[in-house]
Length: 450
Image 1 (cartoon, helix red, strand yellow):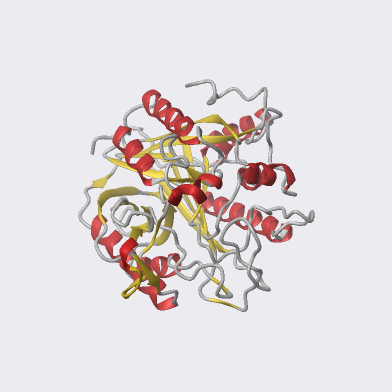
Image 2: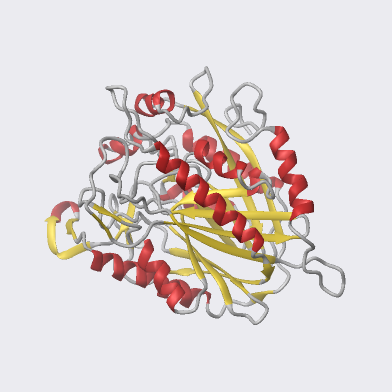
């Protein structure tokens, strides 16, 4: 790794928990999960547990689509949820939590991890769906000294997410896996900036009980859930709600959505193709309706179940997780203002840097990398090409949510990239991320070949 990415944390406030808490989690993992399910040959087999909690605020709160003022809400469509899946085999326990929120910074993630002592904090991956119709969990500061968040709601989300993770541990049961990758068909997503430049691949991980009945279906795909947007007075999981409902109605177990490299600007394809807004530049009017959320979410669910349906069952999948702390300079005045003035008190270095944990996990034949923000699709394609799994997944907006991540070549290269460059840590963010991820891939064992 280069000088801007390091696993040493002495020079900066740590974005994770203390060494004592880490050791406590490791000991609890080995002693507090109960005896693993053991095959006749003595090899510990995989166990999986799931749980979810509703995190819809009551009464409703304003919703946020990013930095700037929030928008008041008058009704809800669907429920916001925190969904957790825990995988355990031998001495390794890995937890994945997905929240129907715009973003969930590590300062909140660590509050969750502190409440889940039976899993090492570094093995708890917390991501968001990135719905633009949920309350602010960044506590974006404003110039008057106030902020846009509700701190009590954030505490409530942390408590409920930890509840889901702890329940998932308690519900661990023998399991096998199906994992598959395929191009999602239908009018689902597109790149608003360049319509055809997006990743059509959908990755699906399905956990099965001993009778081969699905326990959970995890969908990994790049898309902005912003059909409704933040300005309609509606609180909603957006297209993710119908995605969950469809998978669960069709027997796929609990549904989980982990977003991918959807930056700049891979969004839901809710274009009304009969209403061009600027034909010369290929812009259309949008359909910002719940019917479009239903159509896109259900299409995604149907495609996920189609893709995974005939995947071979992996009966003894290996499980591995590692991570590293990466350091990023903060060149953006707007983001540095958030880091230094939010009441969440984001850890940061005196040298105008922030740190975050980037994780790699092998789950059977899948390899997963976490991305602490919204990477542009070319970064996503490149990382997947260099990863070593049969199924290479990127969990975007996971373990942190630092805005857009561009390569140096893309940074402020086109007028269209002015916004994503402004709401990015800086010119070197993409390079540091890529270097850190490739080093993790190089040092990790290869996933299963099944």
